[in-house]
Image 1 (spheres, rainbow, N blue to C red):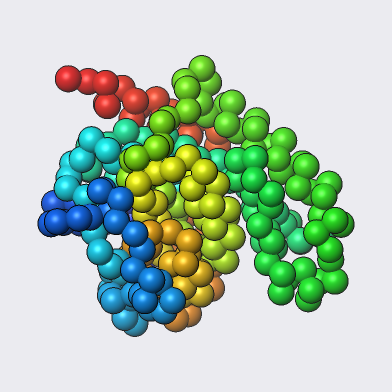
Image 2 (cartoon, helix red, strand yellow; image 1 turned 180 degrees about the horizontal axis):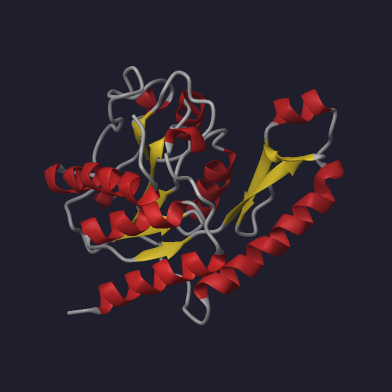
Length: 258
C-alpha cells in the first residue's frame, strides 16, 4: 500500500477511524475501555501481511464530543487534519522530539515529550557505546526546540483539556516508534479516557511496542519490507512551521463554524 501524499493517507485513515466511531457498540474506547492485554502482547487482528488495515476494538460512538485529534508535528498534522474533519473533532498538536545518535542525527535512539524524562532505546545505546548521561546536551537541545515549537504552533491558545476524552494521536508513520512512545506516556499524565494511536503505515516492530503503550493502535499498512516511512509516500516533502500553523488555523475555523 502506497500513498500519494500525507493528505491522501489521512483521508484513508480517516475513513477507517470514522467506521470505528460509527460501528462501535457498548463500552468503547470513547467510554474509557482499556487495552486488550492479550492482543497487546502480540499481533492484533487485521495486521495480516501488511496490506490490510489493522485495529482491534473501536473508539466510541461518532462523531463523539469527547474525541480530540492530536497530531505529532510536523508530518502528522496534514494526516490528522483530514481525520479531524472526517470525524468532526477538534484538532491540536502534541509536540514530541526525536533524539538522534551522536554524529547521526537521523538515527533515532530516543525521544521526549512534555516535561517527562527522555525515552531511550537501551539496545541502541549499548550498540553505540553511549550513556544516557552522554546524551544530556542533546536532550536539553531537543527540549528547548520542543518548547519553541509548542509556542509557535499554539500561540495564545490554551492547551486542550484531555481528561476523560478519547485522544486520537496521529502521525504520518512509525519507524522505531520511540517518538510515539514518549508522546503516549506523556499524555497519560493528563488522564485521557483512552489513547488511540493512528498512522497510515508502520513497522511491525513499532506496532508491537506501541500496543503495550496505547489503548489501540490503528495502522493501515504494516509491510514486512518496511524500510522507512517516506518510502511509502510518492510525495513526502518536509513541512515548515508555517505549514503547521496554517493547517491548525484552518481546522480551528472549521470547528468554530456553525
